[in-house]
Amino acid sequence: MLASTRVTLRATVIFTLTASIEVVLHELAHATAAIAIGGRPVVLYPGAVTPGNVTPSQYAVIAAAGPLFSLVMFGIGLAACRRLRARNETRLAAVWFTFHSFIGSVGYLILTPFGTNDLGGIAHVFHLAPLVRWGMFGAGIWAMTKIDGVLAPTLAELAPADVTTPTARASYVTRTAIVPWLVFGAMRLAIDLPLQSIFVLGPTIGMGIPILGTYSAARKRGDLPAGAGTWREGVPWLLLIADVALLVVNRFVLHAGLTLAR
Image 1 (spheres, one colour):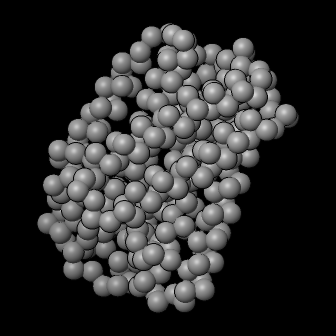
Image 2: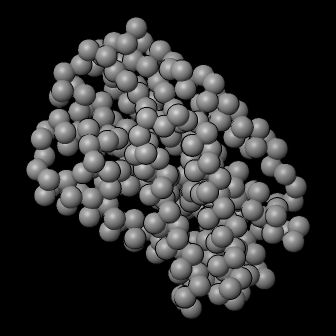
């Protein structure tokens, strides 16, 4: 029981911290593009940037900067995950950061038809036909359902050696993926309240598609690699403090808006 709690805690801290870092970097990419274009003022919020005095085409460039930067991070993360052969928490952090970068780029396709978030805003600016928007939505859903084919064997490799049966693997995925996802969702809700739109939580909700797919694969697939992961003892205090600090900054500093350029 103690070992299970330790794994859940460490996995949750790693998941939420890497997600929070990815969101900050994604939004800073928007802000950098806005400052470079000359939009004033540029105000940073949790999960959003508002540039002032820009044309529709300039807005489209600013909106595209975040997903494009996340796409680059996704590519770098994939390369890092392939080079990291150790079955430890460093690799888990690389896996989750890569996953969050995927959500911040390809995953945004699922919001295109609704005119929200980055790609939805771009679709609105360029008056994309509904058929095109829903086609992008379908492509996003398809991509989301495929990434669990990468997540499932990777998480299986990082499982402790005694995790061998389908039931044990499903329990392990619950502790290392589902619980962290739900905790991060609660964090985003706490940061964003009062919600301007349910679509603010769209990317976080969308994470559930590949995560629940990974859970299903853990229960059903018999070809997953044997676990040989090594998990450290104790509470990851430094990571936990960094995680809480980001939560506090988002809620009590960025929630009111931080002006980066006037």
